[in-house]
Amino acid sequence: MKNFSEIAKTAPLFPDIPRMEMAQLMNKKIEFLQAEFLPSSFGGEFAVVLFKLDGKSFSTAIGSKVIVDSLKKYRADLPFEATVSEKKSKDGRMYQCLI
Image 1: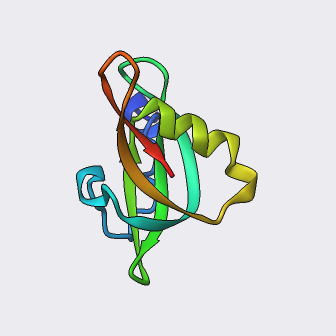
Image 2: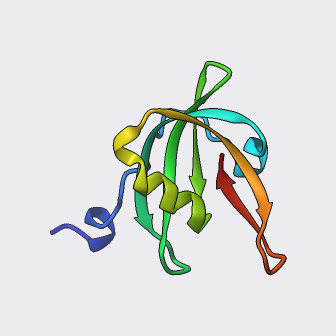
Image 3: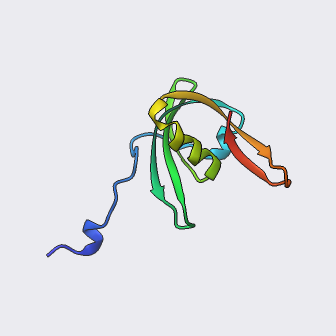
């Protein structure tokens, strides 16, 4: 009989692609190739993204609701280029977005 932990595993997305942290992507233009959406343990969703930077493929996890919503909205238009940016909201909070 199989153990639940054996059947409940989810395969990592893009396991053979080097991973890059979001902080390394700030103010850089990247080519978004693919986005997958998963439930977050904090509520809502996060995205696991395959992208190219300087001609090399990488993956990253994105928790920014603004970026996740943008990726979901324009998923059918992938691939596309965008710059990962940080902006200040009207109430003074910083948030990440694509420009």
